[in-house]
Image 1 (tube, one colour):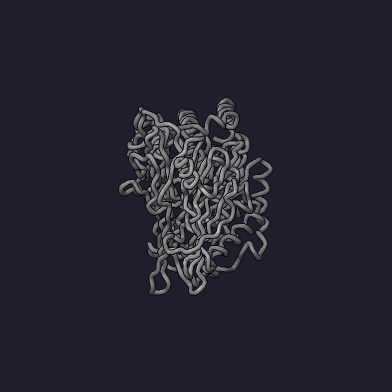
Image 2 (spheres, helix red, strand yellow):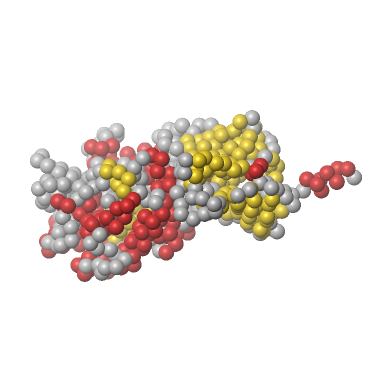
Length: 602
């Protein structure tokens, strides 16, 4: 009788359940148990702590400061909200079961008396999982990614803060998941970064290679599946692989769309992409009707090609897609591409010195001056990007240069704002596609929740930049070997899901001759282009991408600018490319499971 009575007292008061997950909570709003596919783990010490800044005054609030809890949900649904009344603060902890497989905890702070910013928080503060034997945090070269709790049942749990600014630690069996970074907001309520909790049902005997050797391959695979389940927009339910031609690798910035011969040359690139089944093309041609390379303010001298050549006028406040029409010649190019089955992506640098937002300039670092973390800037940029997509017919954007500016203490809020900007664009345009540059490789798997992929080749595409670590007489083989090494790094070290890893097919054609790099800054401008499509090496390059990063087929140089190279590309090579691109669509479910081989070092 005593045993039955004790069990009744220990039983959770509230519970949520969905799919494979069940979670129980007590009357104080603390997680007391979590089950994955029937395997239950008892939980104690579920707590949280938030640190704030109010002008020159620092303040904090913890779960132990709260005197009352009001509960919404918890009657078997997939979400429960605990409103903790903590003196002058109200703090909500929300637990949601995501995709029937993962438990997500989020903390929201409300304070009405004075403006404040959150400076750091423990989302889990000293939580203990029954049966935990050890705890390992996994990190890449830049940020912490997740913590893995090895359990006595030959299984493990993983916890991951969904931001690159977090830590996952354990002291005497108590796990804390926290982040440090200053939020900036104009409302009385701020929602902090969430933590996802997942389960690994069995542990492989194979360890993950490349720096994360304390975790097993099954743990890494389970984490990647979790990350993939949070992806948004068209990537959330991919029906076709992403096929993008990066036309600056054909030196399209040397072409002036205002000149008839240059425009015809650019259209041949579009024609080739359409004929081969490459659905997207990044447009970075000049157009001297609307911009000038002598008016650039970015660090690289490319501003005249941004926003379909309207970037300088946008920065100067002389044109906006929100209020002004798009020039007809630009619309004509977009329409032409559409008739060939190709959709254009605009090249954009997010934090240049846009004059309408001059109040929020925080730096003069090579043009990266705008503070995206300021709420008015975030709202302005969302509306500008949204209007640009609506009015031009663009299919998305290639982001570059940077999204952070100014002192390091601003970078967390800028990262968070940049995430929110892309999230809102996906909400308004679910089919949008993003090509991510701007050191995307340094920001980890949670940066890449939106349609698109991380940074191809981990940086610049020019072999002079990344070095020829794998010598070959074939330029495409050099690039392909670099791409395969990068794919291995993304998979084994950064723990990116297959849907986030970019391929790289072909190569970047040479940008410079013996004299100069034409069309950059004030250098002389002329159409320097070589017939260098690698007929003997491209097949190795194409199949290397399909074998290691087959969901994101990023094409570099295509035979289009040179008329004879375009005309005389053999029909059997055209058919080979088209066949293998179609193969990726037909076998997309297999490509979703691409992974590095644990017993082979990259």
